[in-house]
Length: 257
Image 1 (tube, rainbow, N blue to C red):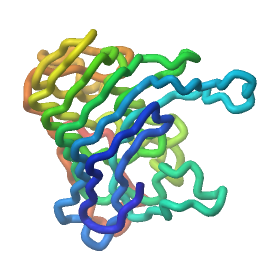
Image 2 (cartoon, rainbow, N blue to C red):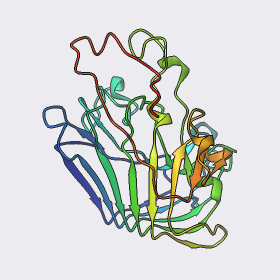
Image 3 (spheres, helix red, strand yellow):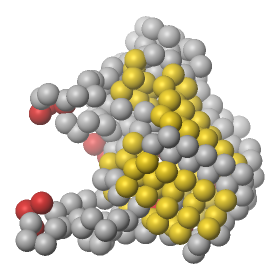
């Protein structure tokens, strides 16, 4: 969903068996240095349902695809109408402009119910996922009082690697944009019911080969393509070039000691 402004809220919504789940995208350039907020309150999101991905006798209408309950939020210079009228605007969640500065997603009291790590066709089924159309900054998620009820551990999140195709002159030069490798998801006061029992407070970070394996409090979760961390210390350092040629000349990767 695209919203113009510096904040947007989704409240008291119930979603069942999403193909590409809910996600806020703020469209903001003029006020990008303000506190940009995407807020989710009291959502209930169900995984598997009685609705078949391939209805009997309707094989041409099958959904043999990965599924996501919540797509990570985004803040960008351009958006699109939420009521798409042309084929060129598909898929609806494709980001249409450069990332704005900053932004954060805050979750309050979200509940996720009955998530398996794979669909009936063996496709990936994730509660949270980053987007393959999100090469730039991915706003961190700060989640309070989240409930996970009867979910597979491997279904909790999937953090995509940078797409090799991003390494081109138009997008990122010879080095692929690394936004997906610099992600942080913070969970506080979490409760678990059913088959998966994890910690009350934890953080998830990307499988960043230059950073994540060195964190002693973190454990690799291969199916999530993420590290599960017990220390509450991670954040995202943002900085930008003020040079006039910032789109034509870049330096990467940058290491900070």
